[in-house]
Length: 485
Image (cartoon, rainbow, N blue to C red; front, side, top):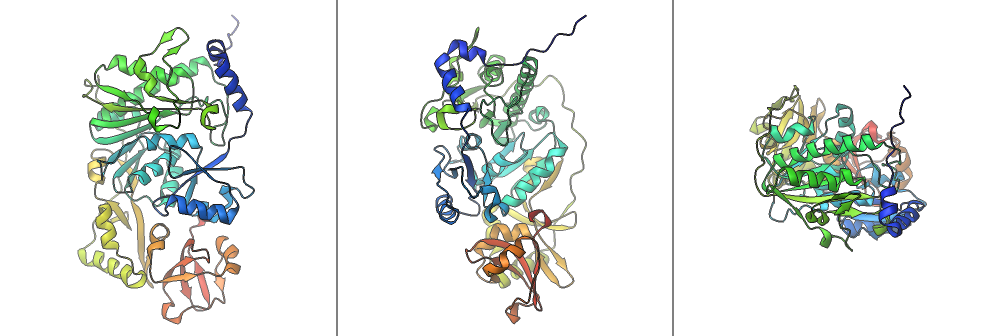
């Protein structure tokens, strides 16, 4: 018997139903996407920072209309991936369409929101959620693939997010494991990536109709889990980087039918510069009118890759799931709370050397000092509430470690808060900067004798935070993590 070739998915349905729209989409496919980035608002104010970088690198910036911290910079000669700021986490390179989902949440009445990012890696939207909540809520950043956790952790470290925990659980099970726990859930679902305009992170590829249908079934299960995990009255944002209706409007329609009266779709058209509604008809299928409240970003509308996003609000609890979930076994790191005298010693050290009030920062962000697997760390006080019964892989921020020659703050801590230090800061001369960024020590560097033996925060002549250096006799020891050079 001859084998049948799987049917490839195409957008012929769009060519037949809306030929003018299809022609505009086709035209946009031939145009290069402008590069875009999002500023780390935990470290900088977005607009002044962008203006400074535009002047420094000759960039022509334009704001992303639905994201105050997002900017297009065209196709610049000096690429954003080559700068010191990118290396040190002052901004994240991200396709502009992907900036929409975290912006759809309303945290105005939630000063300390409990947030789940159900499919978090590589972490671009997770760090955006941290910015949106001022790192004062708590984010459970989950990814079902253990192989993707390393990239997620590095992004969180580089950005400087403290109120977070990384978990590795099947997203389909979280709703049953932690029902009604979260104020907000983001599901940026695994998808077919048929965005009709390739980007660096989402390359164009062929896919079969069978694969699309299988993905839509999984997305429906994931979104059901998200709706179970969120509190009644809580917010769920569902997004994909595909424009196949089966994975977008079709998923919403399936859950509206399965769970009537349990949630509604919020109209998000007013969040966009011009309407970009979801489809209410696809081939021979009619979707509920409410599905038009979602946003379907065709490539030609805002100059982005194709994208889909919807905001849901949970009105009532869903019926109980049919079976008890299986909880994947996993060891949670050992947490030990230091004695108060140790904690006070650390805060005094940071105040004396850097003029930094760690106690006030801990109070503002609901943090505590703990020892995690032998490493002193800052940990969010809401970790237990967020991850009760959920094994977590990592959490918080490394604070520092005690060495025979004295206490040494971590790179992550200095990178996040070093701009606030009023003492213990050294400015590196421009001629030494290339060697420093290669990870080399600086020999023959004249230093203040009173600081010799200390770990200082290093800045360059532009005021950029370069992390830590240790002042030795005739040498500036480079303490940059090896991942940064």
